[in-house]
Image (tube, rainbow, N blue to C red; front, side):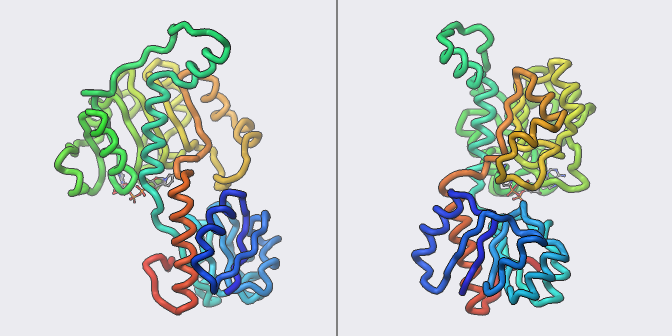
Length: 329
Ligand code: NAD
């Protein structure tokens, strides 16, 4: 079975080639081009394409893939909102995905951001490199015995709860569904109480109509002064202009963002110019207590291995005509 792998980065190729050794029936060819209507015809002669959240797999692309004989779209990510599923279904093209890979990867990054903001590690790093060993501007606070408020306690939020417990924090959480596995050490509270009581707030709920701009000026006002806010989930959970207003009123000891509102789908791209073009992200970067990373929460060796393994298992299930929980319907 032949797979054309779109939008290849060196780390994708490395992780897939490593796992591919266990799948002698599969052949992968890699292209740096991302999948869109202009590049879909490259898939002539391939059984499957492997794509990502950045790909444009709308109607036109799916039509061309069908004309070229492609029968399977392998999404190497959880999201599939960029795929025209109706058109794929019409053409009998199967779509499969990787629903979860390493929740700990994202949760550990969230805690890394919380710690880096709290202890001003980015500032300390730069100061020492400039031979400035003074401690001014570097004071943080202990996480031990403080309160962590986790919004969304699914796979990643649960991992974050466990990490915060490990730091000796009191862990409170808000979710529309409670996770029974956490009840031994997590107290579920209302959103209002979470906002009012937490010293660290970390967002782990998905972006939906009900969570869009969950963090806005009114919810920010309800937070404790000196709180640390971390968002590794989706940018639009936070209303950026209101966040800037909150930063200006000295609400936050630190803000750590792995995702931002204007972020495009191109999470794997080198987007440094693009990000700086966006005024609110550039404005956020101008504040000394804001730390931004480039949607790298998932980016660990283990997560990439899990993505490669699940994607190739999906390809095998397709080849052997087996149903899979990873089918996107
Ligand atoms: P999940 O589906 O396991 O958990 C999401 C949780 O949010 C669920 O418990 C759900 O009940 C809860 N939720 C839903 N609506 C809510 C609401 N209105 N208020 C509070 N909680 C609500 O998802 P997950 O795997 O833990 O992923 C969480 C998010 O992390 C994803 O939606 C994604 O946006 C983000 N993510 C980021 C990265 C990264 O690299 N930064 C990587 C993967 C996922």
